[in-house]
Image (cartoon, rainbow, N blue to C red; front, side, top):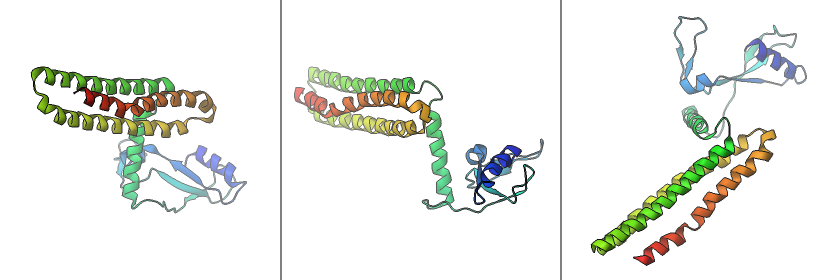
Amino acid sequence: MSHIDIRTTLSYQQNNPLAISLVFNPQRLIRQIEVAEKKGDPDKPLKNDPGFKIFRLDNVSGIEASYHSVDYEIEGYESMEQLINLTQKFIVDVTNLFPKEKVPQTYEKIIDERIQQLNSLLLGTEEYLTTLTRRGETQRIPEVLENQHQEINRYVEETNKRIDFIKMFKEFLEFKEREAIIPQIEKSISKWDEAVAGLSKKLKEISKKF
């Protein structure tokens, strides 16, 4: 632990002898290495390291207090390897879908683009079926309808997953930001919900035309 870590732990443990300090190093988790303390020394490779250690001070006499690591057990996972893999994936998702600034504007842009692409898929389907009809290739229409329907469903499913991430990440906002930002995010999400709610009807209308 650094002197800052010790000072922080000291403030906890002086008031509660059972207090602990969890020190997190994201590089250990992401890169699975322990950076060498001295320049020129090799980094130490790690395996299934969660990126943190838990400590407790041996005494609370001051910032020069010694400390020791505390054993722990993480429940809810089949193995430490599974935990590391899921956590690393979560970090990638957070990095890609949790903007550092302009959160509502970024999410609105993502959702508007997904709605625009969904409408393009519907329009493209109708235009292709019109072309087949004009060419006298109506026998292909059922197959094309089925393929396009599957493609659109895959696109919706993919987008729903991204929307689920947005719903989850908005809960990570600082409390002082939530009142102003969350309603804006939910307003954008509702636009996608409206677009998907009418999807089945639009697909049926296209089918009836041909």
